[in-house]
Length: 412
Image 1 (cartoon, one colour):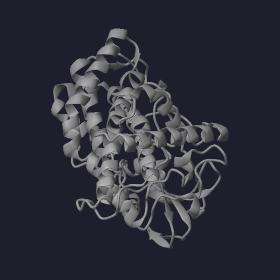
Image 2 (tube, one colour):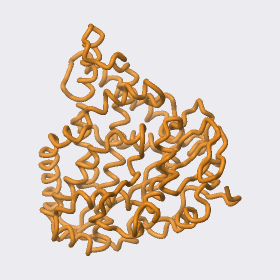
Image 3 (spheres, one colour):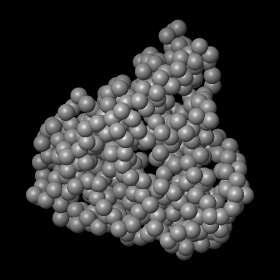
Image 4 (cartoon, one colour):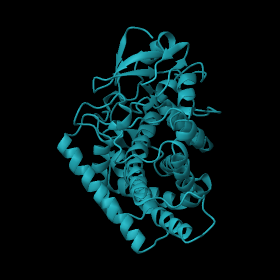
């Protein structure tokens, strides 16, 4: 590894552009020394093959407090996702992880998402109609990008969407790198755990047909001798609480942010939007290309390397923390021809935005469906949609583990 230290996060000229450093790193220093905001040292990967191989290797998992791994956030200001707090960590290793994925993953299959699609479309139409009624300019993130995935995930979990402002604050503190103080994070964490614990207790007392309620019912049936389970017993209350919290965070931040970024990328070059208007059949591949092209994804995924490994001919010693930059890997010319161009018809498109291997994103079918529904509905309802400010004037979300835009001003 080269002696130069890369300081993360890397800066960009505009919110939609990739850091210029990525190309140099992929070419000359694909296994780089990095300094995180905490001041801790890590290894930074930017090539597609290296990132995919590490993420796909079941030996290497998300760091926890027990690993003495490199921390992302400085002392006292990191949320649970940035610190690997064991209080909120879902099973991530071995059979407990596989059992959890088997149980929860069956609620996020492509078939189930197809059944939810008509309801998502009606919701998108209602939100867009309300945005149009209020008049231009509008903030597409606040009008559509944020509420749609929030309403969907709240419905799946059986929690009241009226609490969405609290969920949003709790999600931000969960993902904090530098935005919140230790006291703010601790208070929010306690409130979030208490809220979800009460929700799980209510589901146990009065079974329901939402995701958490069904998980509880299935677990109780197994404990009574039902042989249809996987033999591992039902999820514990702690696992159910962590599942609910994790899904709420994902619904609030990752998909909500991606909706705004996708629309901004498509409108930043009007020819992209016009091409979709002319050929709506490109919506699915355009969504995948938006996911690949997104340079503002966040830090990437950390992996704790518990033993010496070789990456690109270099030895990474056991005990290292590796940061896998999926957005840098997604711009690798060795994996994607014309990687610097947004090709709405690109196929196949094996991007790494949802990770890879046994720890890939459980909710990716849901995210894809929501993004497709949003894009289809906007093209139909607001074909004249445009950015209300020049793309370089968009403002990035700061201080969180995930990347996004503060607002997406649009007109029509």
